[in-house]
Image (cartoon, rainbow, N blue to C red; front, side, top):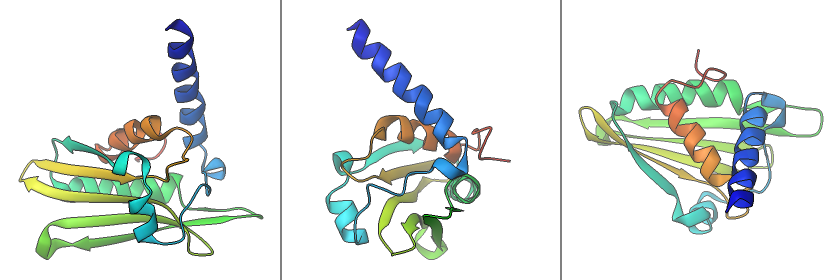
Length: 149
């Protein structure tokens, strides 16, 4: 039990250090299409209800993803796309490679004026999906000191 807790703590620490720097964002594993990403996602997507209006959650995630996920290196490119559909009170955020493969998908849905459902789809082989999900909840709340200004 102690060893498992130590491994989890170390994984979270390493992941938090990686997410603090744009140049280490993972472009793999990925999936060739949005449908494949959703169909083959870790636990069919990780979802949480966040006590904040959906537009604020969308703006916080958009800012955080632009700052900490979209990047260019000599050997790789990851960019983010965002789609806000106010008429159905929903937003979608993607990260994709330069070849068009999907690295992640996030959806933001209004449940009430102050409650939002946030769902994150990561490839099945993503190395730290639960730590990444917890980090993205902080980002959704605007509380990631590295990614939310």
